[in-house]
Image 1 (tube, rainbow, N blue to C red):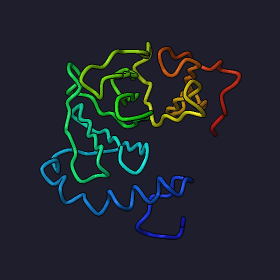
Image 2 (cartoon, rainbow, N blue to C red):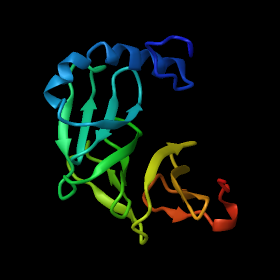
Image 3 (cartoon, rainbow, N blue to C red):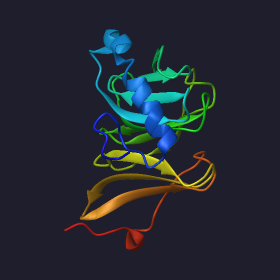
Length: 171
């Protein structure tokens, strides 16, 4: 129910219920209060990933009862504002600021590989979403009044910028 104040409405009822159940367990995450989490991806009632500052990723595979904290190697200074998880092993994260980067894991966050690095230091990624397992989009702050957009057609293995004339204008 989108009017339920305890629910982060995600357009999918099962995800909403999972977020409600996981939110009830957040007291167990208190050891991580020094971190700021900005990204959340709920896969199902058991699996969810969160991303935040200091290169931090949290993963649960038991509905939020326990969370595993990971620091992305060589990126402990990054603020991962957005995350998209496909399942308990595969996810994509996007970093904000200091030349945006996109990383992908296929081993539950043990290792990450760079799948996109912005050439422009002003790139600031805000979110990731997928239509299906292969086709996804990353959006960032507007540059020169146009929304910055990346697209993948191979499940996030590679990303390309959407042509400038295809990007929405912000005035």
